[in-house]
Amino acid sequence: MKTVTSIILLIALAVMTSCEGPMGPPGYDGIDGEDGVNIQGNIFEFTDDFTNANEFSLSYSFPSNFEIYSTDIVMVYILWEQVDYGGETVDVWRALPQTVVLNDGVIQYNFDHTVYDVRVFIEETVGNLLPEETQNQTFRIAVLPAAWASTKSIDIKDMNAVMKSMEMTSKSVKKISIK
Image (cartoon, rainbow, N blue to C red; front, side, top):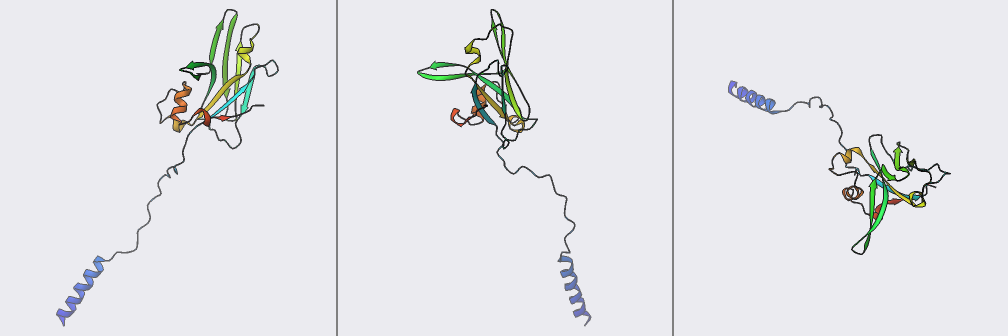
């Protein structure tokens, strides 16, 4: 009988040591990662006139459904000229500010921005501005999220490089009206 009891105790001991008890306390949650949101900038384009009435200043308010952060990079480009390149008309964009030195003074196209709007303006020391300097001026506003831009090695002063890195074409630029 002692042998049978010893065998039963040995089996019970083996079964008891191989069992698991209740789970221990859970570990701490880590920091949540991003949910795969495609962080990419936007480009807006508008054409307007600088006049005495608007004090040579054009303002654009970002739409209410467009979120911009104080860390985002905002660039403004002016359509400087259009050139013929092998039978094709090609736009030449320049990043603002742009300064034009004339015989009778200086004109500077410049901009400022907040998280709500962008203002493009002319500062000048000349007596009279010519129509080609003020009329029918086309601008592109590029909003580049800082997180996205920090992962790219692009020259943000080059509109074409910015568009290429954003995988955008002229057709995908959002045309806007500031009136």
